Length: 114
Length: 118
Image (cartoon, rainbow over all chains, first blue to last red; front, side):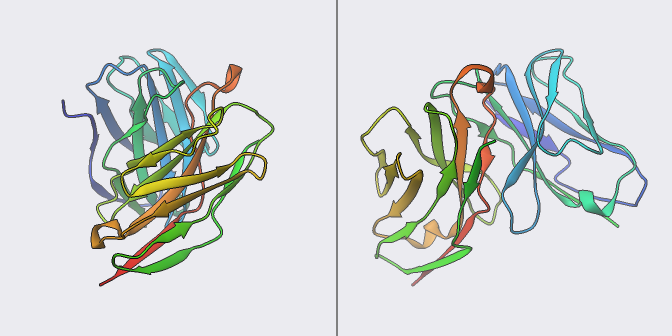
């Protein structure tokens, strides 16, 4: 199993550009999450999904969109990139979201908006 | 809303010694989970230890143990026999376990950077 994979690893965007951060998991997990980590800070939840076709906002959703057409994939879309979106983005997944389920994290995408 | 606070931005420990990282949280829920994650320079988030709030016994994982004080809403991590490989940023995290909060969302503290001196 590859676990949770994210592409790209690094990206530099110009202000106003758009991009999609890809996230794929091969563990057949129902629950998936996108977090952002600003320098020296903890992770904050952007969006999450409890299954294919179901998504919901987290703590910091502004400027982002998500979709979940399959169990495996949970892409994060940035429209009109802004310097405030410079961050490291982590995708994570977990089987059911409750109980003692562990959340598995991808390696992260470092995004810089100039 | 739940919050998690780590009041120590940086800590250092001598190799082979013991260090304790602090975490406090605020919640009105009675059932929840608490976690400590390690983030080395590679950025990979690694689960260190987990505590279920309904369990009074403190969780332990080899050299890592917690001191869970539910009434005080405190959840500290103790690292014994510190090793150079323990150097990393450590995050405390909270997850609800009840009703509509059971979406698996994690709420993180700000992190504590641990330096291990040889």
